[in-house]
Image 1 (cartoon, rainbow, N blue to C red):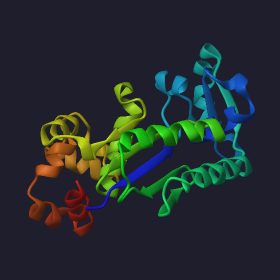
Image 2 (image 1 turned 90 degrees about the horizontal axis):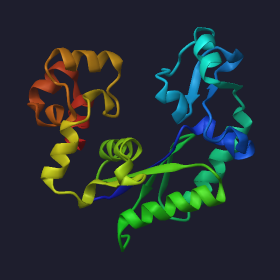
Image 3 (image 1 turned 180 degrees about the vertical axis):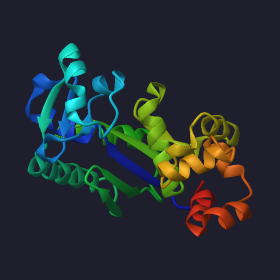
Length: 230
């Protein structure tokens, strides 16, 4: 059975900006889309204020003034450079690497010896030291599961940025899946999430355990593939 890791840079555009401007650390920062229209990246401090992704900047002027939110224009040349540096570092950890997006990369961990959580921590430390951006690592047997593991690594401080599903018992997995909304599953968009919720499927565990034949008949083979990966 394959073992994969998903390495994802936290708040990528904001983190990239902080590499070259340390004064932005620990302050609320957003990066805006082309023409400074909408929010495309938020620091943790901004997320804590409840600012949603893709919110138009003009709607945030009052809250920005109140909380001192700093808004930056996108710098895609910078982000591409930082991305290339991150992917270069990650290539040292596995010969089989799939760059999924500008801030995400799958690593094939098959055959690696030792504690993979420790390997995940080594990845985090090296990327932070060599590039300057924070990452989280999710480890599991399928891509869909690595996405969820990465989500847990980001959202739950007790995991310290690395979550390895391959070492967990079925009971531990069930408890985690029962606490995550179904919309967090890779490929479940807003419309599909609403349909699942309306049908009583509200958590990842409920989706995984639902009759797969019925899911396929209602939502197609892509949904079936997703559930099988869960």
